[in-house]
Length: 117
Image (cartoon, rainbow, N blue to C red):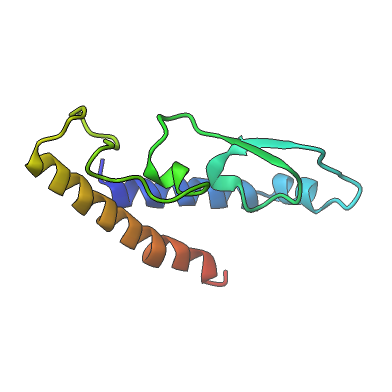
């Protein structure tokens, strides 16, 4: 699956889930208090409570960049059938894939959140 398409679907699922009427009632209820939230990492910015985020996939640069710097794309494979050590061509491919996904995330997906409904 194309990385950009996967990002779009992940964002769509998160937004659709959070905007659901029942979820909005629950989250908007001022009597509710969250001591701790355990949620998929993509929902990390929603709650005003300590958050333990988890991922159902192997840690990759997008997840780890939330807590640290980007990983070196030459040495970490992200959803690719090859395993390190990579050839020079595979390293270039990983770098280009990382740049593409970061650009799509930082422009297209982030701008979707800014569009008023």
